[in-house]
Length: 205
Image 1: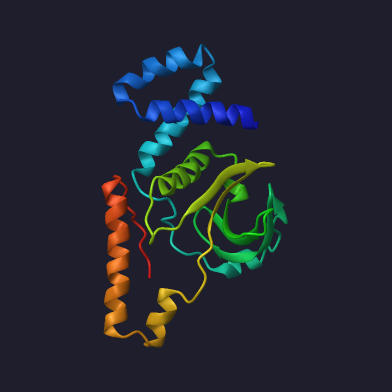
Image 2: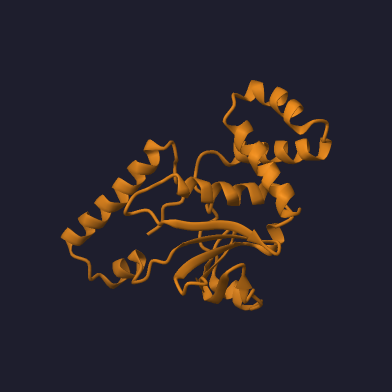
């Protein structure tokens, strides 16, 4: 799908998803102007959105990085972003360390190549990015950019460096005060998401 077509589908999807379900058919009939394929594409996205529910997509848990190492091919450049190295993998794709044209380091999430032609997965991927964009909280990662370049869908976000909570818990070095502070930060971030009607169903340490 070319970028112009994708943008049109996305615009119609965003307009339709805000309508009551019983009003969507009439809206699409008028907006698509007899373009059967366009209407089918939008309806497919609406169906995927309904199936996904109101949560941040990535609920397939962690996938071992070794799976990707068996197929080490990865893009070297996506739009303005230079891909540096793999950071992790998930149900929807891979996350890389990347650098933009200004030299800023970002976390670059790419939709898995096997899912690019599946409109439902594309819809979920884009919905995830829009969901995070709707949030503004110091304990929620900041999304810088969403887009598509040469058939690759991406989300560029703030790069958070340092030791993971899982690693800190495994070493047993966290004191009770630190555990409570981290728990409070996580809870306030979730509360901010809930205020926007968003439920994250894949909270991991």
